[in-house]
Length: 183
Image 1 (cartoon, rainbow, N blue to C red):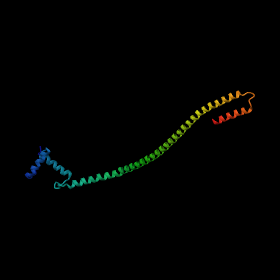
Image 2 (image 1 turned 180 degrees about the horizontal axis):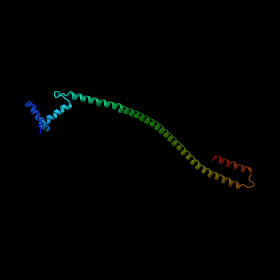
Image 3 (image 1 turned 90 degrees about the vertical axis):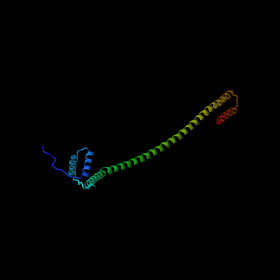
Image 4 (image 1 turned 90 degrees about the horizontal axis):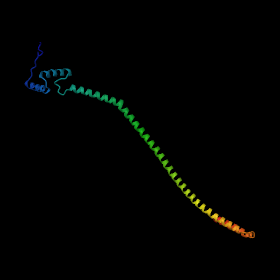
């Protein structure tokens, strides 16, 4: 079997202490951490001297700008038309509500006026019914009085004989007519 550990790297003890702390913290051997570090820098193409990591910043900035562009595109394609449509729907709903309220209020006023007119008509009808009832009562009274006058006339007429002068007959007729007029 061939030994894969052909190369060695020399570094100061301070660096070795830091390296050991990193390995312990990650729970790996120093050899594994070293291999993984080399792979990381190789794949990411980062410069270990660049502590601020300008390449990463540039990559993040580029991705951030792509996301912002995507969001703006979506906003223009979806959100702006949706907001415009919702505004139009809101305006049309307000117009519908306004027209509905106007029509309903007008209709309610008309119904209220009709109810007042009907109430006045019913009041007038009630008054007329009362007057008719009053007249009906007075009509009954008139009939009774007329029958009384007629009975008195009949009795007086039967009391006349053939010899009763025409003047008395005429006085009786005039007195009955006068009594009827007074009713």
